Image 1 (cartoon, rainbow, N blue to C red):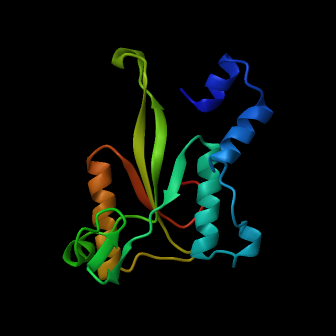
Image 2: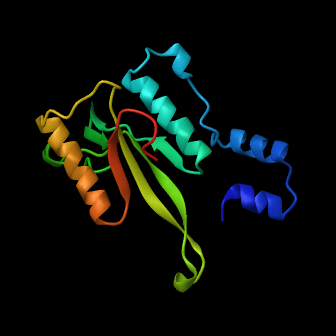
Length: 158
């Protein structure tokens, strides 16, 4: 059930619901695209996150990398368990979940579908670099398992 539907069912005001979502950082607030270079990857990411919130999705930044410490490397981000793995497959910039209503023949409940977006600048074109190939492998894995993943350089991909 979408949060807005639940709020209506229980008589929660729109103002209270907005405040709750603000408290949990669920309204897609942050840098506006006006403060960013038009068409940049950062601007596109903001646009995608705002569009996602409007459509009931929740997307979070998936930073991927590694840092050397006194005891070794700490790796972070999805599918980044080793340097070798990170060369082969690269998880996307944004990951999240979309509520999906199951049709009556499937009991009528709601499930969450994994969503992944690899953000690119507005003028980006796939060049088949090693990095892009590894990002594409992630997209293929997620879609093969029933998730929703793609490259995006603008609106209309949710």
